[in-house]
Amino acid sequence: MGLRVTSLVLVVGAALLSPAEARPAPVQETGQETGLAAVPELRVTRMVDGLSIPWDVAPVGRGDFLITERATRRLLRWRGGRLQRVRYPRNLVWESGETGLMSVVADPEFRRNRRFYMCHGGHRPDGAHDVRVVAYRLLRDKNRARMLEVLRGGIDATSGRHGGCRLLITRRGALLVGTGDAAVGTNPRNRRSLAGKVLRLDPRTGRAWPRNPWIDARNRRKRFLFTYGHRNVQGLAQRRNGTLWSVEHGPDRDDEVNLLRRAGDYGWHPVPADSGDSEYNEKVPMTDHALPGRQRAARWRSGDPTIATSGATFVYGDRWGALSGSLAVAALKGSRLVFMRFDRDGVLRHTRAPEALQQFGRLRSVTRAPNGDLLVTTSNGSDDAVLRVSPVG
Image (cartoon, rainbow, N blue to C red; front, top):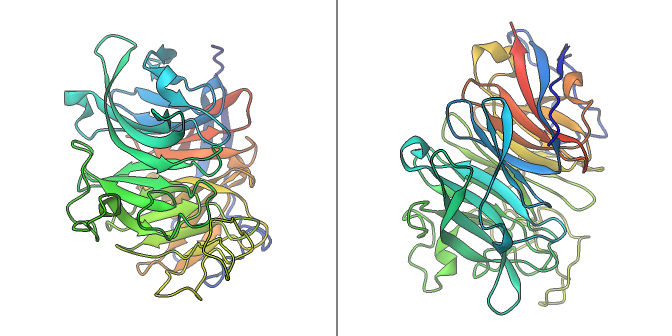
């Protein structure tokens, strides 16, 4: 594997997204906030390159990171400045279209138990496929991982479209799983389906989290649901105040950032108004407030055109200056990193898209490193990289 490290120090302007890119209705403010610290310069380093569609990065202690590649299904380890391949049961991973080896997250007790979790396509006994969350153990002093158990399978998959699967372990220890709707119109609002949802489960046992809204439901799948009505969840993040946020792709308009509420309905229902079948109608609103019940309004939306928002994390620390407290969101089609500032009530105040991060093409995943830096993956299909983004000064 090729390895090239290039350090670039670029000034982050206080640039806002252009109206065509931002247009976050109905919560839009185009001006800058006052009274904030200065926007820092950013150093952007190609920490690892020679990759092929790296989907996610997980810190595993002592400066080491696990990296997943979606299409090749390779699991890699960045250790001591070197990239190493980790052997694991790769033949169990199904890859097609947007689905393959996707999100990875380390157990909070990784240094003791060596556990980590991945979300990927899988092969079912009947010859069909699904998306599943699987627990693994990284063996000591060996570039090998052992599969421990499938924590949650049966997440719908069709051609591989809308199979996005993002993992996040919350501060209370729950494992959140953001899923796509598998391009089946009835899935998002069908609470017996795991597709088009945010799930919440116990990462040690695979059982539904005991405080889930439908924990006593007769249908066992419904017990895992935290929120529903999603199209294709690509990012999950937790704010310092404990609130949970999702990022998802819209159709030809309205990528969304949502504040997740227990049992919340996020309003995606791509079926014809006069039909109950699974025909996929992407002309309906991304959040359809005409549906029965209450639909949660997006805290940010792209309008038209979309920028294909993806992974996200909140940024904290004095080094980040005016960017501290913002939600950093990667954009694939938009080829940039967008910092979104929300107030205490979750109302959008402004967005910034630093020029320093508009030179690397499609950006997919954003992970906060232990020292507060950001790790951002590119997704261009060749010579992809893990970028380390560090405030200067």
